[in-house]
Picture 1: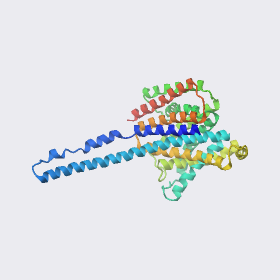
Picture 2: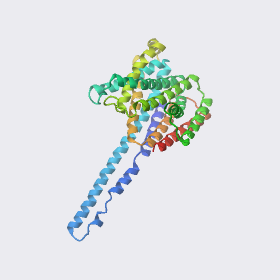
Picture 3: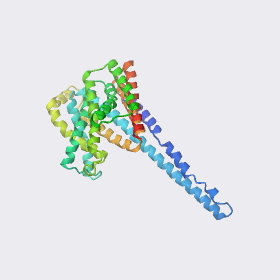
Picture 4: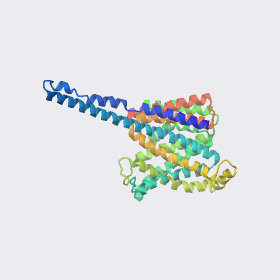
Length: 380
């Protein structure tokens, strides 16, 4: 209970800092400058009518400035709330996921349940007309199928990694994704980036290597699975560029609906794979966990559903956050998020980290931030 309180306090502190850091203070001041009209200087103060005009203009400008300031405040609060939810859902997912994997060693089944839970979120939105449902042809689905395969690999790899080792170690390895992305872009798209981008990969590689050597809960399965997630994520990005750039796919397929469609397709991919690898062993294991007295049917089912709900929601909110801020702010927020998750998992599960692991993870995460900033400067 004390550990969970610490996690909540940590999340609140981190998200408060993020909300302050990401508030558009510069835009407020620039708006105020633009709207400061020297109305009195433009209208001589000889007559009462001129004075009235001047006062009216000044008052109008002040009113507009006040309205603009209120708008910026509302925008700051909205962005702050997106980042707060992004962090909290992400922390919740990692904790619920790890607890479920500790109770039931069936990562493929748990990954399938989590993926399928997302359908319970977006299907009612489509059915009730709260969100426009996408319209896709068979040709569109064929185009999306390789991307959905990669999406499946991203999730399954991460779940297996979280079950095979510490949450903190999985996220340290996940920080090396930019290395795989650069290699995939070069091999499949022929994309050659400036040396300053490749230079930022060195601290990532070195940091992950140091952390892996000094990780107290190191397993090759956790390392390989986290790398599978990285490779799948990179390939998903490359395939998206290759197959979807400049091509209209279906109708109403915005970012959120695309993620929903990939979720539904991944669920259909996962079900036969889950049955082939783990069979139906999850059911007796579920009953055994309840019989052992650690859980009730309701509490264990709730844990599994919470893992699925927080998984889908943190991705949904991440899309909303990305749409509200520039890439640099999003990169900084993503870096802070990874640090918060590592610290929160260490507190929640009392997982020890060696000094070498802390140093290595810090170097790797800092490298990912440098990579994001370097990539953003190249795109400008």
